Image 1 (cartoon, rainbow, N blue to C red):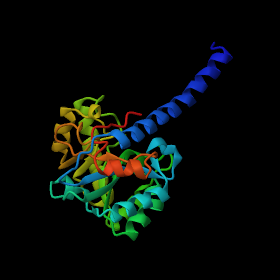
Image 2: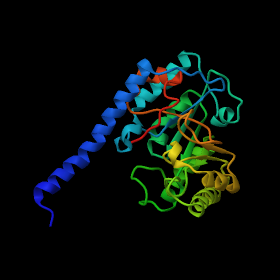
Image 3: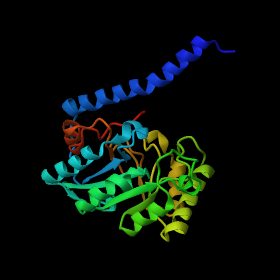
Image 4: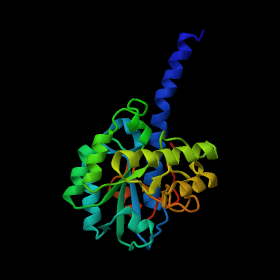
Length: 266
């Protein structure tokens, strides 16, 4: 039997660890904003968001007001928003940006869609098909198929983010093939389209393998999106993750490439 004081300490550590990790991330982002190397991208930059105003998404949650401000700041600076595929396929210009959202959090419909629609900005949403097929198996606060279908009908590109959101660096070739193929088939059955784009869950260099890359190609995906521009796995397209801590200083540095070698490790 575990003594009460030990249980209490374990709970405290469990609550404290995310806060410490978040503080570390905030410090890293701020430091790189001031001292990080700038790396302009000749073909444009793809931004990755997750949720807007859903604290359960942790460090990946951006306040809706801040998101709107970031969009408007980028437009004032002279950036142009284009579909993610334009940049991924090598047809982007230096001042092009693209918006993508991972996971399918409800706030992409409630908060992101109105802002992006107001500005006429195209965007992509990567969904986890198993969370949609079996509500309750994923996190609370994600959309259902009906909402995803409405977004697709409104012109939002829907891509795959797997069936169960696994770490592809830890599953075998057969498991990777099933996650990739089954998700594409599920989206096709529900929406009438077979997506040709896939975003790697977690997205870091360690979360993808050559076997997974082969499986993605065999499943019919043309574009595989990862995370950091400089550390992305071979054959993938890099994105710049926007975090909860990205004020104007950090966001401006992000647009200039200060985080192209930074990966979200939490």
